[in-house]
Length: 294
Ligand code: NAD
Image (cartoon, rainbow, N blue to C red; front, side, top):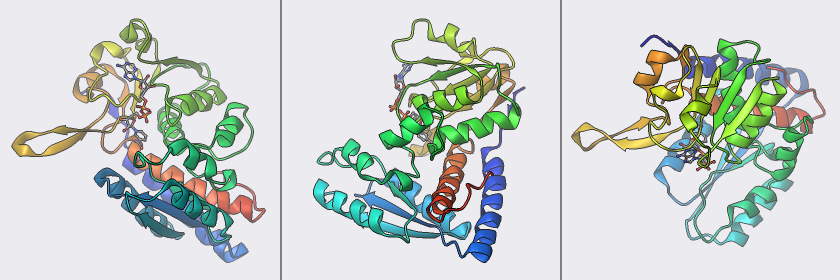
C-alpha cells in the first residue's frame, strides 16, 4: 500500500470533541438543550446497529436523544402521526426516521412529513432545494462527511477534478452540490455512463457510492488521486462469518491512490458526527442563535 489511509474514525472523533464542547458552552451560556428523536420501524439488524450508534453518540456529545420503535406492521398513517407529534414537540430539534421502511410505507411520504427545520438527515425536498440553490440550511450527513474527509487531505478543493460514481438523492446528488460549492469541477457518473473507468480516472477526487462490493478497481484510479469510498457492503468471510467492504477494492486501489478511506472506519463515522452537528445546528436555529461553524 502506498496511499495514505484517511482515518475517518479519528477525524470524526475530532469533530465530535468540538461538538461536545460547543453543546456544553451553549447549554451554560444560553440554556440550550438540543434533542434528537430517532424513529426505528421493524427489526432490520443493520438499522438496529445504526440507530444504536446514533443514539449512543448523541448522548456522548451531551445531547438528549429519544428512540421511538414501531413494529414492522405499523401503518403509514400511524408512522405519519408520530412524525407530526415530533414535529410539534419543542424539545425535539432533529428527527431521523431510519430507512429502509417496510413495504406498506411510502418512504417519500415520510421524508416529506418531517418538518424541514428538524430535517437533520437532509432528505426533505425543501432541504435539497436549499442546498442546490446555495441557500443556508441543513446539509445531508453522508455527503457532508465525504467533503470533510476530502478536505482533510486538500484543505481547498477549488479547481480540482471531482468524479462521483452514483446519483442517489441521499449521496450522489447532494455531494455534487456540496463539491460545486467548494468550487471543484464535478462529474457525476452512474450505471449508464460509458467507459466508467476512463471517467473515474479523470478524478483528483473520486467518490464511489453505488452499493456494489469492491466494484472500483485499480483501473478506476488516477495515480495519486484521493479516493472516498462511501459503500458499506456485507460479504461472506472465512468460517461462515461476514465482513464489511466498500465499493472500492481497497488493497489494489491503495497501490495507485494518493489517499484513500477504509471501510469500515472511513465515511461511516463521519456520517454520525455530521448528524450530531446537524442536530446542534437545528437547535441553535430554533433558539435564534447563530449556526456553530465547526
Ligand atoms: P442507491 O442504490 O440509492 O444508489 C446507487 C447509485 O449507484 C445509483 O445512482 C446507480 O446509478 C449507481 N450505480 C449502481 N450500479 C452501478 C454501476 N454498476 N456502475 C455505475 N453506477 C452504478 O445507493 P446509495 O443510497 O447512494 O448508497 C450507495 C452506497 O453507499 C451503499 O453501499 C450504501 O450502503 C452506502 N452508504 C453509506 C453511508 C455511510 O454512512 N457510510 C450512507 C449512505 C449510503
